[in-house]
Image 1 (cartoon, helix red, strand yellow):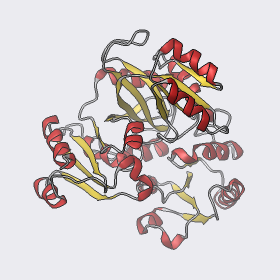
Image 2 (tube, one colour; image 1 turned 30 degrees about the vertical axis):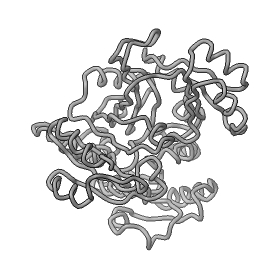
Image 3 (cartoon, one colour; image 1 turned 30 degrees about the horizontal axis):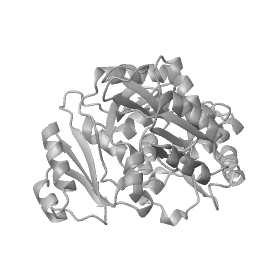
Length: 399
């Protein structure tokens, strides 16, 4: 099997995916725009060959690279980046090289455009927030007359919380229309008062989950826009209701042979037309793993190796070399970070000393991620929710 991995060096945990593919006997071919000598030695060891392009943004260069690998190694079986930013180019390459093990170019808008995601959630019988495509101030006002303030406005095709706005009154609405990017198509949604949760899974070619877990996290828009201290955690045990709605969404989106991160709101109170307190509302779908170190957090919470599960799915369409360790008690895996501009009660040394046995990772985050992820992060695992909350308090308590 020939697997072309786009941007295998970023994020840096991608080497783990490549390593497990190699262990499963897959020929792993990397394409990126950095020098080979700068690659992590562990990634170098996992790659059969590496092709450097001047820029991954230059589609013709990447096309040429895949063509080179095709000529040298034969038919390409998989093309993947596991990165939201490159999903469209991944799909275009699959279509151009007749690689059928992934989303094709003519279907990719269904997992990139939020308005189309809502149609797939509806197909699965999952409610979503009412919405309108924002084109004029008059149309926006008419929609707000229907749903009331506040409303959320964001690019229909966008990543993370970039260019996302919570609009609470007419003055803010007018300001938005004066400053909006006219080259961007925006979607306006009714505001949902809910906790942000996710259903994360590795799905085989039959649309069946080989592995399932989930995350509870604050709304990323509030974190970025208000500069809040960041936290989120992987659930110790998945709520049955979330498992059921996640599986329904998999069918609605027709997901096959992918790692997915599907986002939902869990209602904090009854919402007319949507559901009762505790019900789940479809938000967005991401046809790739959650970002950053979250795959490692899946592992710490579930005592497993999701990189190996994913590689087994690719190579064998079933779990062969991964161990689910279902006999072991699972954990909460908690991420908490600090911001450089805040003063905290407890020092780094005090946190490390008290939680020496629980902390599994801590490091400074790259500046590019600081807005969404904080400047310095701690990741720790716990058996109880009480222990987890005590850890959060110690990391985040300010002077």
